[in-house]
Length: 401
Image (tube, rainbow, N blue to C red; front, side, top):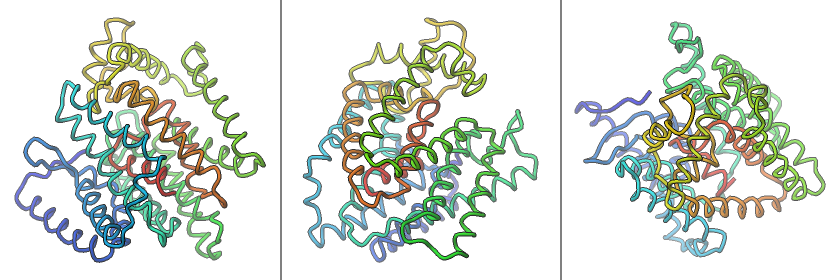
C-alpha cells in the first residue's frame, strides 16, 4: 500500500536521502543506477509538491538520469537521439502527454505520465550510449531486491497479514502486484544462471536457491496469471534460442498470440478453462474498455482515469463482478484506452522496431527474451507495465537489454 510522507521528520529524512543520492549520481553514476534497481519498491513512498504527487522512486530516477546525462553531454554522446528508431518513441511521448490534457483528472494523469513514462525514459535513454555498461550486473540488484521483498512478505505471512481470501500481498495493494515483482526478480536470477559467461558453481547454487525461494513466495500469492506468464517466458525464450530462423519463429509466435487473444475474447468458456473463474471479471472489464475506446479513440482518456470511465460504461453491459478497476487488465487495451489509437500505434511501432533490431543481436541477451514472453503472456490478462517500478524494467528492457 502507498505510504504518504507528511511529517517534517519524514520529509526531512527523504530530503537528506535524495541529497546524498544526488552526490552519488554525479560522482558514481553506475552505483546510482544499481541503487535505483535495488530500490524499485520505494515507489510506494509518496509525497506532494503543490498539486503534483511524487514518489521516492521518481526522485531517484530523475537524479540518476541527470547524472548520466551530465556524463553524456560532457563527452559528446548525444547524437544517438537522432536515430530513426527513436522517432516512434518521441511521437508516443507527445501523444501520451496530449492524452493527459484530455483526461478528466489532469493532475492524476500528468503525475502518472511523469512516473511511468517520462522519468523512466529520462534514465533509460541516458544509458543507451554507455559502452562499458555490463548489462548482466544490472540484473543482480533486481534479483536481490526481489529476495528482500520475499523475506518481508514471509514476515507478513507469519504474522497472519494476508488478504481476505488467504492470499499473500505483503505491502502491495494486491497479491498480483507482489507476484509480478517477484516474477521479474526470478527472471533476473534465471538469466544470471544461464548467462553466456557462466558464474562459478557456488554462485549458481546460490542463485538457484534464491529463484526457488522467489517461486515459493509467488505460490503463496495464488496468482495464476503470473504462473502462466513465467511458464510462457521459459518456454518461449527456450524455443526462440533453439530456433535457426528466429525472426520466422517470432512471426509464427505472434500469429499464434493473436489467435489465442481472439479465442479469449470470443471463445466463450475458453478463457475460464485456462485462467479459472476470475476470467469472467476480466472479460467484463475488456468489454467496458472496448466501449471506452469507441468513445475516446483519438486522444484516449489519460493514465489513471480508467475507474471513472469504467463505472460510466457499466450501464451498457450486464452486471459486473468487480467495481474497483484501475485499468483494463490487458496491456494492449490499456494502451488504446490511455493514449488513444494514435498513441497506441506509435508505441507499437517503437516496440516492433526495437524487437526487429534485437532479434539480430548475437549472442541474444537472455533476460530480454525472458522478459518479452513474460510481458506478452501476462499482458493478456493483467497490466505488467503502467506502474512506477514495472515501468522502469519495461523501458530499460526495450532500450538497453
